[in-house]
Image 1 (tube, rainbow, N blue to C red):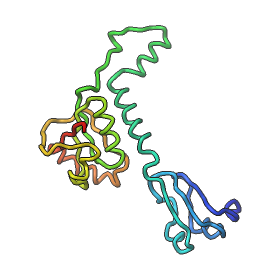
Image 2: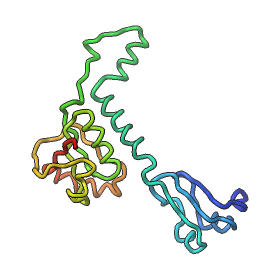
Image 3: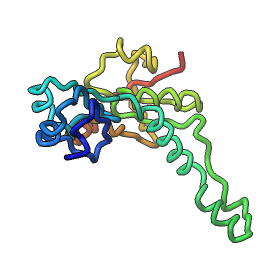
Image 4: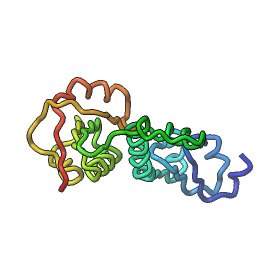
Length: 188
């Protein structure tokens, strides 16, 4: 607590707890910033009582998360870890190391928020067909980010991604039965 006595601002990640006690010890504190999506590790009520501004960076990791999703998709489509191990062992058996292309495959995206929209953009850039479902997003709002078609489809997606920004697993559970009516997305 002695570390915060003379600070005007505190910047934290998800693990650092800014409790009522920390806020009381920080006499000069004006602002608490959370580098990430939520503020559940900050006592917002106590901060408000003291007139301390609490803010976060909800889109800070959006692109990194979408890129990591594609890192995993590419690693599933191509035997990258096996190829690395093969090279380390001085082998190279092309027949066992062939994979498949993402081009032309179908990706199901459950939740078309910030991360889901970024994943969809990248999938479209790879030439994938994208089926997206989000019970909270209107088609008009989805159109600028991923251009869903008005028609419904019953084709099953190949890989499916569920962005970590879903507020609860309950939301994802509700989405599963409706996956039949996912909307196909197309490039702009």
